[in-house]
Image: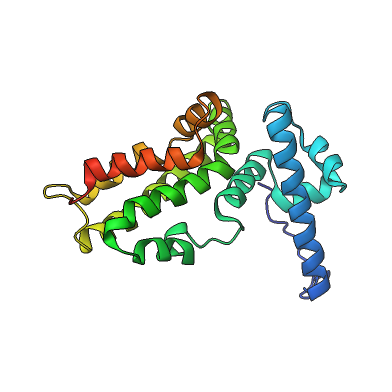
Length: 222
């Protein structure tokens, strides 16, 4: 990280003011970079995709791209976040309307609703997450992003587990900690989803049914 300059400019010098048009252009540039990065990462792999190639694909200067994202690892992290959440806002999944709607429905259907939501999420994210997991093995910065993402995932699942316990949806003797572990192991493994859908020809709905029945059998109050 660059050190802060000792010779500071006078207050207000060189200051750039946000305007709606400028904000729109910046947002459009970010979208172009993220789309280009996802295309090239999935086509060529993380290691073989250069920031220069992403800039060319996005139709912007390499300098602009570095100003927007800083590093390739940060760029892949944002590509994955966009795939998972649909935007770059910091709001966790557990606080988003679709998640709250899933939790708020009938208790008897909560595992099926969670599994369906998870299947939809996996359909749009599993391939890019798989790429990120593999790349993290050789990129320390990306590994750090990956580890924080895993922590965030468990925090979201803990919020769900607490709600399941509060609503009496868990079997006797099943703790919140156990619930988080089982949800994490069963429903967040992109490798299982891809093996079943890509290699075995399963539909996402069939995958969702498997997840729902597995969670109900191991966690549900019955």
